[in-house]
Amino acid sequence: MEGSFALPYGDLKGSGSKAWQEACGLFGFYGPGQPVARLTYYGLFALQHRGQESAGIAVADGQSIRVEKGMGWVAEVFNRESLESLQGHIAVGHTRYAPKEENIPMNTQPLVFRYLHNRMMAIAHNGRLLNSTQLRQELGRSGVIFQTTTDSELIANFIARHNQRPLGEALLACQKVLKGGYSLLVMTERELAAMRDPFGFRPLCLGRIGQGWVLASESCALDTVGAEFWRDVEPGEVVVIGHKGPSFMKGEICRRAHCAFEYIYFARPDSILDGESVIWVRRRSGQELAREYRPEADLVLPVPDSGIAAAAGYAEEAGLPFIEGLMKNRYVGRTFIQPSQDMRDLSVRLKLNPIASIVKNKRVILVDDSLVRGTTSRNLVSMLRQAGVKEVHLLLASPPVKYPCPYGINTGDPQELIAARLSPEEIREYVGADSLYYLSLEGLGRAFHRLSPGDLCTACFDGRYPAS
Image (cartoon, rainbow, N blue to C red):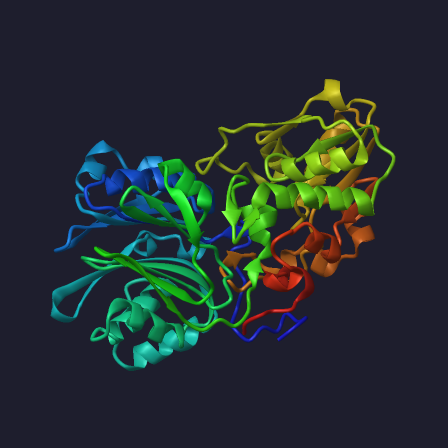
């Protein structure tokens, strides 16, 4: 269904406490003779931005699978002893983001299962199934008992139903019943496999290190462990890695629909996703923004960190000074205690603080990657006013976010998407800016050089959902 909130895949309402959170980070390693657990640990560090609620690593040695996982950041979950206990030549790692109601220990991944003939399987998953309710009911009616609330457990059950087939064929058979956006890693005692949904919503790439092979959500994780980028896993493709190396199987390909928000916000700037450099997409978005809207101003100010590249591109195109006049406190992390309702402004100041000596009496162009709920932008504009800014022009390097995402991103309550309720002028009044401008959808498309607009999912902007 296009252009409507009446989506055919259930309730998308989240806790509302977080907006636009990525689901998970995946890292898999097949490397006989290599310290796979330790290298997977480093790979998860590189993917920490994709999930901060829990982390886990499972390792296979050819006979069995052992897993260590827990709640918290990667560095909180693992220590030297726990990593040394994970001996083997295959590993699967996972960092997880979850809505508040699903952020429970039993949902931490990788999930490890035993099935027919006491065989073992570990699964790590990034994304969301549109038909999870239907699949859960189907399995429940056949007597399946669930231990988690994750889509990953549903996928494992369907893989186990094809236990007489080789792993790659079992995954392709499952692909026919799984609807939605996902990247998937599956490990048995002897093999490592990956599968990407037929639209390619969620990213996944393949690299090589020595005689070993690496699978990761983003190429920055390959760089971290010293692996050479090999190629992206194609939409609908299954990769199986064993002692003879990788084999590739083609599944269904509907159309490319790579998530535009991966490039706008979620991915690390040093990653390359499906051939596009993330940082250069962001810089070109800023350049396009300057071509579309250029108010009179003295300097360009980025909102750290995701607005920096777009702001640099804007300043370059507009011929204005680029100055980092908002200082970010990089020690405010997951354990930060939210203040009471009457101290919300303080919560923003703990994270960002204007440098008055830079911005006082200046006309400022404030560049951010996007505007979702508007509360942070409103507080930032207020802080800049207090610091003595003469004018604040808020420019967003993406179109208005009007529609919820069902493909693996938690948008919270759709009614919290401010652009779905208010006009741009009403949003400008709400945030208190002198002017407000969004990059057009056409301008965003021009920021991509290797991917065409038809290769992107922009449903959060235009309501055109590729899969339902």
